[in-house]
Length: 169
Image 1 (tube, rainbow, N blue to C red):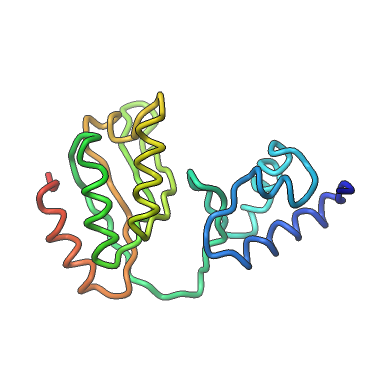
Image 2 (cartoon, one colour; image 1 turned 135 degrees about the vertical axis):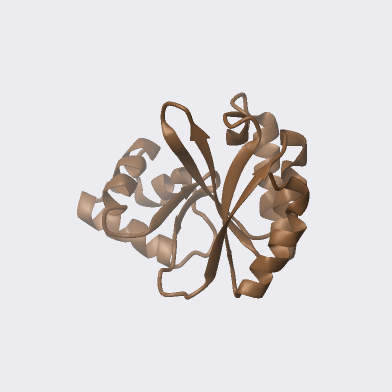
């Protein structure tokens, strides 16, 4: 594949992300545009100044901003063994786990995008966690962490809150 000009390549990346509902990996974008994954990382950094691009463990996603959904942040506490159950409780009730956030005594808030809305995505995420040498972010906060959850309405968020009472602090 012939190497693309930077501006053309970045437009192509946006076009690809606009046509996908699932995250697209940096490697896949690199292959589609004929550059290295590192060039894609640099392009995404530039594009994030103008587009709502989320970086997840599964790849990049262009997050639609025009949708009006309800959001709530839940504070929970548990160990790694309960991660799968916690996330499945949320997605089973129709929630989308947008992120995870922990408080660090030096760095302040540390946040990572998750974008999990189905059991399959939760399972893939948990398998990645199990293989990881780093572990989940909640170990930084001694199990205490926050999730921003999105749903169609407040009633669903209320149900999710009840389902997470087991992990509430």
